[in-house]
Length: 126
Figure 1 (cartoon, rainbow, N blue to C red):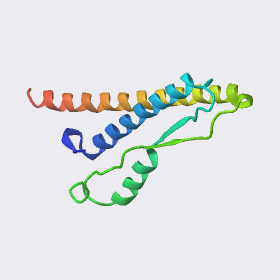
Figure 2: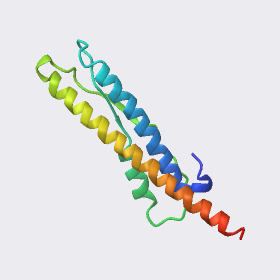
Figure 3: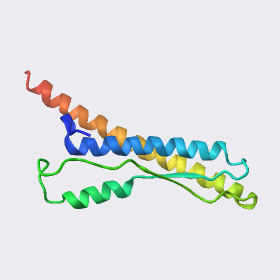
Figure 4: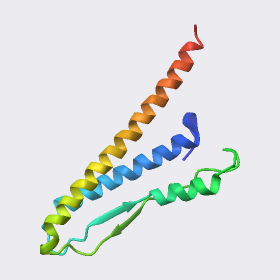
């Protein structure tokens, strides 16, 4: 990942959006396969990678540290039993909604940041 116009923050947001996209696909697969015997729900984790990166880079300038984050971690859980199927479905729907809200918040933040850059560029032309 390169810093580009948005720098390290933009790269971290890009990484988070990729992770959220992968998580969305995993949750969708979990919901689609909830009734499949022996199906093991999938989980995607990436937040700990971002936190570890931020802890390593605290106090450093952007030229001192390059952004290198590992791929999001994909893991599976034990198969869902018949007794827990309904609770599992409700949990997946809650996770899906949470994921959508996180994605929308990041996209909204990027939009505001782009608007600030646009304004800065256009004000320089006047």
